[in-house]
Image (tube, rainbow, N blue to C red; front, side, top):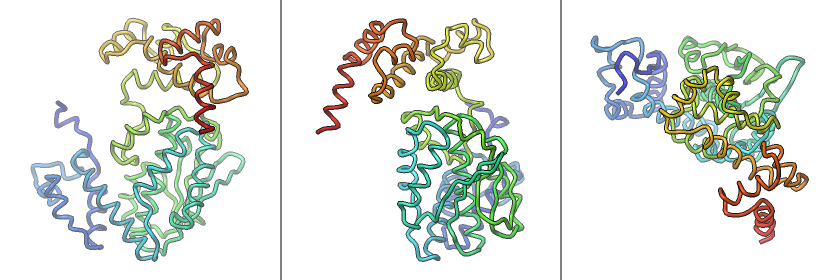
Length: 349
């Protein structure tokens, strides 16, 4: 059990901002707070740290408040709201992209397909910076500002999650005037915000666009079951097995093959003994992680007709195609050619 002193917390200024904004549009915040056992805390009980609130208890309140604010702003504009289902569908579309630039281009097409319900999006670039413009074109109200900011925060964190790396040079720009609540808004995104800008946008180093997407569809399902993306930490507290899995996926995508056990330990900055001990504590083995990553990449590459089975075997670190065939037979019950044929049959049916 986690001790109270190490409990993750959210700045109380963020909690106050969300609660006040939700109350202004008629949300029964009292009921939400009672369910989360936060009434005493948010009323300033001296037994609590009044500068912050427990994250795990506040997140259900945050979700309900942010959803209600988004629906309210859309209604004020006479639009259908952008829903959780829309976001889940977008994630399902972008999880198979190769690079961050592919992700953003796919997201732009997705937004266009919503016919204005999510505003308009485009990608601009200058010499050093990528600029993802995501403008809902709402009227300039305090609730619209909060809605836009949460959207930008969510997508900036989603981009970083997909490539397993925070966006370097990240900053947000907003068309709105700087509000009195700017410090609380800054605590949501944890990056610089420029107000009274020409557009609502996520700006970051252009070099990040070439970063490969290393997350899988399975990772996506786990992520969507967790906390809002704008409050999700990236990487640092992930288990060693998860970090290693992401590293090996990236190596395979870049065509660099599979690392040896020693190379893997070096990649993670650990001695051989410490590396193996941590994996054992997580009930994982290096071999099992390698085989899992190989299988994921094999199934992706076998869908590309221009690659031969021999080329795929080499890419995955097999000395010869027969070893690759045996691997597929054991893990999947069919050899590479049979799997490829099953894809063709399925696509024709």
